[in-house]
Length: 325
Image 1 (cartoon, rainbow, N blue to C red):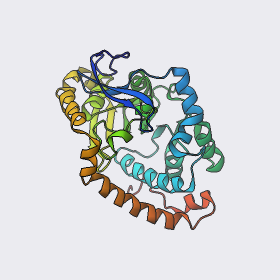
Image 2: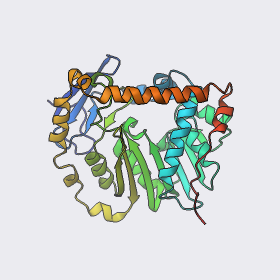
Image 3: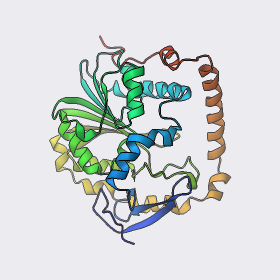
Image 4: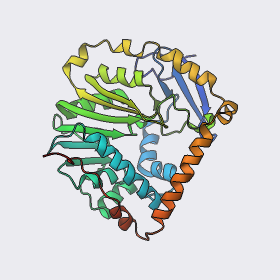
């Protein structure tokens, strides 16, 4: 069949439908590109609908609250520390960093203990307000990636579980390429279209406009003048963590060759997924056991605190400059 939107990677319109509902059973069609294997929502909500959703409803839809609950503060502090560990591989003292999708500011809070020139942009008013008013982080502001116009001024851009939400990934990558200094790094993490830790009917969400594979995200990066420095698959979730460097050399690479063979593999992945197969595998039960163990430890820790700020401050912050002379 033909898609309404062209594939954001290769421009193709020939697609397979891989889902017709979201994880709550509401109508939402996701399609798979015959050429490169990209998955996307088609048709897509209007730009106006998306802007309203992210400004007002997105965080409540995902987290059930307009600002983070205590348990989310605990989880996001741990995740922020993990992101600092990744950042440390590419950070130089005094680097100017842009964080796209700053959320409630936990990554910014962890970095505030180090020598990082930080700026964060977050479209959700409630979460950005928590960062600014509760955590005192003036570097986090309400807005969108395109609002940042400091071209050629950032050493590092981080975009963690945000890129899959952006309606125009090509323009977003081109914009971040313009914002980076020559040789600057873009550190990104996105969900994988081949992740199997959720049941087949609990995968797709209106907020996730695109689902990438290692091949499609690499091809898109190279197409826009980036060199892929490192790509890792996160154990368990199979999230794709990719680091790119702004480099003219990447423009000479045949980016279309990077997704060769991606479509048939992803097609097979969807063909072999079923509710019966999922629940006959060990995956849902081992995941449930890990989550319950994690929740038990989380509950014991979180219940000690009545105040969110006290809870946040109790968790040691990783330092991006740890171990440097």
